[in-house]
Length: 183
Image (cartoon, rainbow, N blue to C red):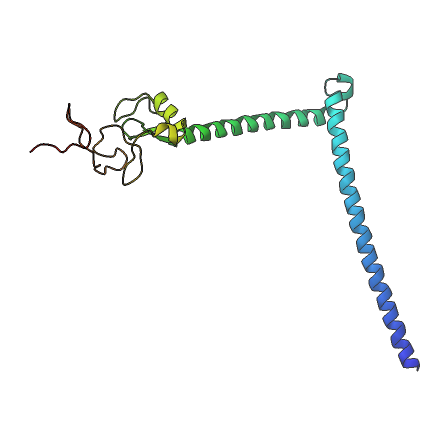
């Protein structure tokens, strides 16, 4: 039985070694997590202390490069934030310029940067105001038989898609509804 005892002892030593290695790795991970938490807390402490003592000349003595470095970084950050704001403002302007509205009078497309509708001269403020109204308010009366766009009274063609509309003839003066016209 000496052989099996030797094998069993070797397996036990191997198992113990694996357990020690695993436990050591686990403890090192915990240590790394604690060090990261400590660095984060130290950074928070440093930031709050900096804000408190940055205007005290006696606290700057011997730490001039640190204070200068922080001030330089703060200036760079402010410049970058200003540039980001400019880029975002330009993007918003471009977005606004790309917006088009449909003229409520003639159906032409009107760019948001235009001052008037190029089709009929309606001021852009009126075009934008019309676009802001719910469709039920803007579209009173009949609609295009093809695209459903609102039609103005007497329109023969749809201003949105150009489809000819069937317009009922206006009654002759003095004619009564339901009476047949004379031939």
